[in-house]
Image 1 (tube, rainbow, N blue to C red):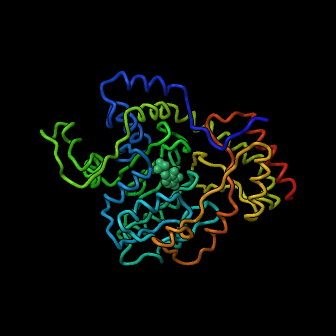
Image 2 (cartoon, rainbow, N blue to C red):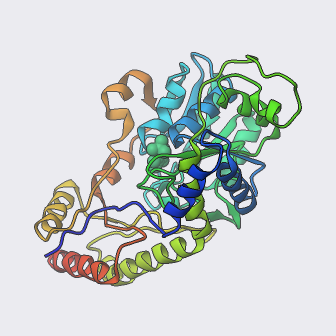
Image 3 (cartoon, helix red, strand yellow):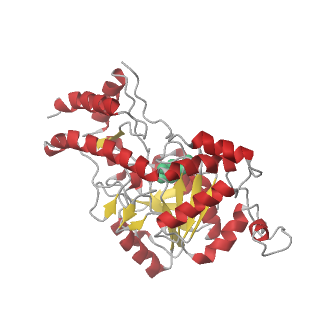
Amino acid sequence: MDFIPFNKPPVTGKELQYISQAIAGDKLSGDGPFAKQCEQWLEEHTQCNKALLTPSCTHALELAALLIDIQPGDEVIMPSFTFVSTANAFVLRGAKIVFVDIRPDTMNIDETKIENAITANTKAIVPVHYAGVSCEMDTIMAIANKHKLFVIEDAAQGMMSTYKGQSLGAIGHMATFSFHETKNYTSGGEGGALLINDQRFIQRAEILREKGTNRSLFFKGMVDKYTWVDIGSSMLPSEIQAAYLYAQMEQAQEINHSRLSIWNNYQNAFSKYQAAGAIELPSIPSDCRHNAHMFYVKLSDVDVRDQFITHMKNQNILTVFHYLPLHSTVAGRQFSHFYGEDKYTTKESEKLVRLPLFFNLKKEEVDRVIRVACDFFDKLV
Ligand SMILES: *Cc1c(COP(=O)(O)O)cnc(C)c1O
């Protein structure tokens, strides 16, 4: 019985050719021809104002925190059910993280809990589009505008998803994508992008990403020497990463369709168990088109969830859970606090388990995952 992994990095076929092309060219550092093509692709497909590739989504979040000038003591509101970088990017600048509860249906930040958590120190809201399913962005943008706060979308999982027809990443003041190998599209293992919608940030973003120099203006012929003009860091991925990513962008629809078809197979096979009250399945609000980033099942509690993982593992299928809510972690207790009641964050996260879902997952493997999972669910009804 072959092992079915939880994830394999997507490969579409053109990656090696494009990497060879990059090597044969005369620029392997950042901002090369493939990087430009990737950024243009992102701008066209999301309709964001400006896209800048970064070495990771973590870096893109850190860049966003620098751009909105987070200072020690500033507060940033986000869900606790997220990856550590969502918080750490702001903690690095001295911010205090304020977590609010999630909605049990989408596992996204509960937009109705945000406004009460705002204080005179609040600087930004960071909605995380969990599983590539959008947060309730109209409400979040209205709250942000009313209180003059920035919205940084953590759209790490959200490329190719939409909210009311608008691409995720094109809604907040800025947004971040991840091209880590566990995401729908990868730039060869690690990578990310900062998407900028508020034009005020574009020029400074290019400077901060280029070690605090105006090198990008120099390349555009807008200054005749480049020099140190601001704080900054090195946040450009290499041309080899961009070449890998561009091969994936060219196949973005194929990857999306293939993932959605796996997702729908899971959903259809398991819906009768949801109807019987044995499990819960992801729910997609009608305003949202998702990208099948993830298929998860929620079981009745942490014990049943762990029994399920063991059951799948015994049949050579790897299923995983995440995230340990950040407010309960060692660093979380130091840098954050949870505003209001933790009604769903901890409870719902303990029920959740993710099934294998990746571009190169074969139909017969999907069928086997379904068969083995159903053996377990049958015993619950
Ligand atoms: C994957 C992920 C990140 C981090 O992405 P990297 O590219 O690995 O830095 C941040 N936030 C969320 C919600 C993620 O899923």
